[in-house]
Length: 226
Image (tube, rainbow, N blue to C red; front, side, top):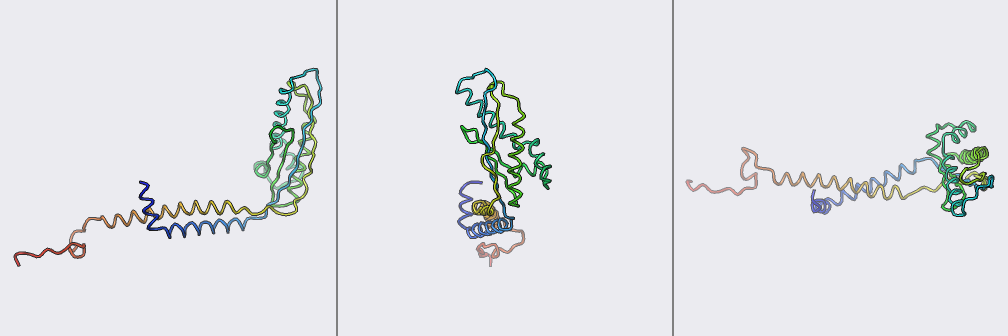
């Protein structure tokens, strides 16, 4: 559809577009407020490397290898091997995919740190999950053989304990506001275009058979024989 048709529909039916956007935004706000409180527990781990062989890579290479291995440990924190043990240890009511959706783990750029964030509707449970992930990851790394390229043994230490959150995370208004405005506005504009198209069809519809000319808005022509 040409762009000017959308503009024409918006110009004529802008109240419908506005009302639809406002109603959609209000609906999303209501849904957001009905969601249960969410708590986040955070913990940090730091990797250290102890030389275990005579292999001595250059400093830049060693730095890259250490960072690569740290990122590998980071990915392991979200694996079935680690999270499965967490579920079993804490007797969690989650499956692996459900727990995975509540866990985030990443390694800041150019560092040997691993950040773990757990989101849950229960503050104490979020803290327990974060700390158990750290414990299981430390235990996993402790049993790993030295990296052949690096020639060093890695160890993880939990540097920041996952304390129980003091309160829930603040409600995010960005999603309802922008989602409602854009989604509702698009829905309203689509409805306006449909209404405009129907109005255009009514104006251009051919005369129906048997319809009096006056009813069709056609001027009556006098009969010269009368």
